[in-house]
Amino acid sequence: MKTGPRYKIAKRLGASVFEKTQTQKFAIAQERTAKNRRRGRRLSDYGKQLLEKQKVRVTYGITERQFSNYVHTASQTHGTGAVATLHQLLEMRLDNVAYRIGLAPTRRAARQMVAHGHITINGRRTMIPSRQVHLSDRIAVREGSRSRVLFANFADTFSESPLPSWLSWDPKKMEGGIKESPTVDSADPAGDLGAVLSFYSR
Image 1: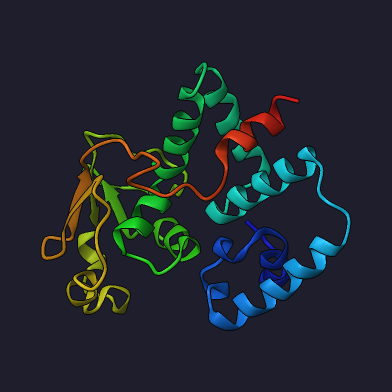
Image 2: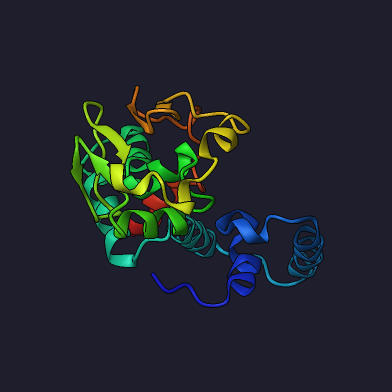
């Protein structure tokens, strides 16, 4: 998905949408922008919902069509379950799972990793970043890819960052899976998913 100038987008949606904008320098600039925004016209409820929608969509790096399909599926679940369903659909994408495990430093890099065929599900090579991973699936780095520079010293770097509680991973075997469905407590949502659902329900 083409995103355009990242710093410009992050100023509008927030630093969390891109890893490269999560710096002290950017935070200072963002604070300055927020002060100027408070002096101006306040956003309407629609404007706030639109920003949340864009923030979540850009964070996960998916197209508008993909995102609206996720929202449509989640909307079939009534009540508060719709938020949980939307969150799970986003988190259980293969590219996001690879990112959460730590196989790639960013979701964009994880998407490329999957698209280039470095990841397998249940022993079969897959090149679809949007593929939904299920609790019974076994995820692994393809045997022929493990010696690549891309995964050099992975076991060392893996120990430096905590693995989300809903995932399992063996850095020596380079394989793992989903222990349980992700929740807002075990996997921080990228934004206000309730506001996102409200935006699409208009």
